Image (cartoon, helix red, strand yellow):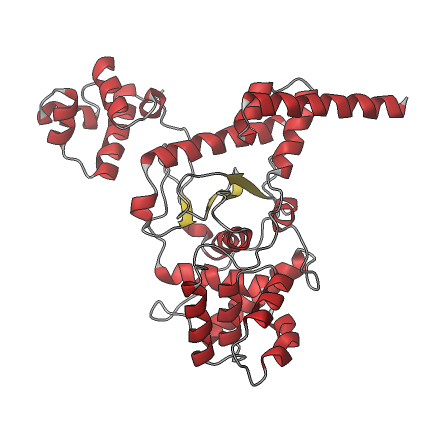
Amino acid sequence: MEDIAKVIGHKIDRLKQSKGLTNEDIGNIIGVTRVTVAKYLSGDQVIDSARLFRLASKFNLPLKWFLVSNEESMSFMFRADNPQENFDDDLAHYLNKFLNEYIRILELAEENNVSYLPQAYRLHLKDNKLNEDDYELIRDIAEKQRKSFGLEEIFDYDIYSILEKNNINVLALRLDNSNIDGLSAYSEDKGAFIVINDHPDIPEERKIFSALHELGHLIFHRDDYDSEPGELAYSKSRSNVNEKIANTFASYFLIPRNQLRGYKKLFRGFVANFGNIFEVKKEFGVSAKALILALKEEGYIDQKNFGFLYNRLKQNGFEKIEPHPISSIKKNKKLESILRRLYLDEKVTTNKVAELLLLNDKEARMLVKAWAEEDYGDQYSED
């Protein structure tokens, strides 16, 4: 068994590094000298429980975090403005706890299948920039992925369910910070996870794009999901070019260029027309911003019209909201289906249903009552 002093020392050192603290800073928090802190870090001396509790309380950490060396967590890659400001320890621990609970539910239901994930690719970039060959490869991979999902000629689909049918777990959580659109996590033994921020201020088009953006990271940057025991944070290896790769993949997946070509006549001799933009964007289920960017990239509108349309969207308040938005798509259907089965088999409680489906007590009781009545009706029909 690993020495508990060394386990705790390693965890305190991880905390020290992540917070940019010195030994003296930690000593001031718990009331010891920096020399004593150094002994804690090296494992030569074990910290007493009162001081460990003080340190845990200061940074809102459970005591268990300091005591367990092999509790596996996953690092996250995600879309956000100013990630260091938007991704804090409280959010990291909330997501870690929720994901671990979800994984336990999958294991309980024997649904933790991590096989047959999308093939991983790695682009070999020159000067850390995308060239024409890179764009062509991303486009080919996006088209190949659509085909493998059975979506070659289909545009009216539930991308969240499609992903889950292909062993990528998708969870919709309402995070308070609407600057965080989506996150993803991956480990070889636990599989792939995409978390969508289901905040009501985020339009459905943006949520869909976020899901495909994170799929892009899972395909092109799988090696970047390096996990360290007990630590959960956004990936420090994420770069602007990685973001561009993920965005490009999402755009090619959602707006297949061979299908977009069929709308070219709408923009021939183009005079900026929002009516055409709104019509086509609803066909593809994408944001107006994503569509006009694709139109510019394909040369269907020129830079002048692109600038005009983009500025008009901003002026009309469509940076955060969406003109002519599509309807919300029901999410967490796989999770709800698994919980329903486990609840009827008396393997989970109403409280666990409420916790994982983010329901209050009344909503959870009503839901499980409906499940029980449906189950009774099904049995009666069979009889």
